Length: 252
Image (cartoon, rainbow, N blue to C red; front, side, top):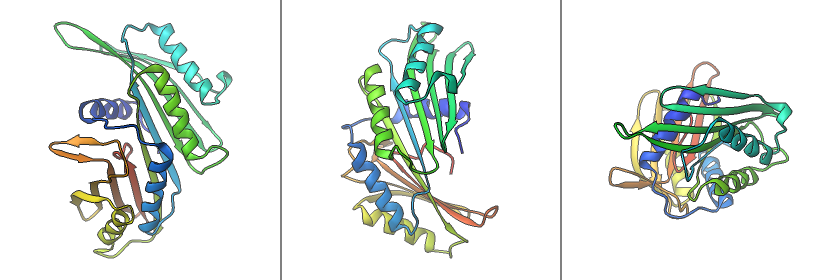
């Protein structure tokens, strides 16, 4: 499921508030840990979602500069200009240019945005956001996609942030405590500590910390860099597992 435009902006704004980077985690290692956790939960990765964003050095970008940044980013993601159209959305507080394409099972959204805030003294902040959803790994591995996004972001700002989510599923509905047992097995498989739990009759969500994943976010006094959730879908009779680092940045 792709991010609606408004949801993407909310996610970026939320991350800006809570994200406290410790180091840049090697992409291959983070992806490998998430895959290991997914397998320990009894599923295999079926879909991937990689969301990256970076704050630009300046927010004083006009429409032409935003468009050029988005076009250049799409080109570096190996997407030709003929494959997408630029969309321009402008409000009092946001000026956004977006490119979107679906090709070979891969959904790519690139956004250049200037946000105005800080009344009575107006402050303008610029951001580049890239969201890629992959239905199945093809010629580009998840590691390569993460590295591409990281390279693009580093050219634009000093502290790019990348969130990776894996999605898998099991057929049918699990028994009462099986959800929790599987998530606990996933945490143990990568030596991660459970920090918080949210359990409901329709879904279960665990957040935690792994010393092998170097990026983290701070929620209150706790540092987390791992988020796992499970939910049952009556519509297709599947139990979905979503694993994200440092947090889940998509609906589950």
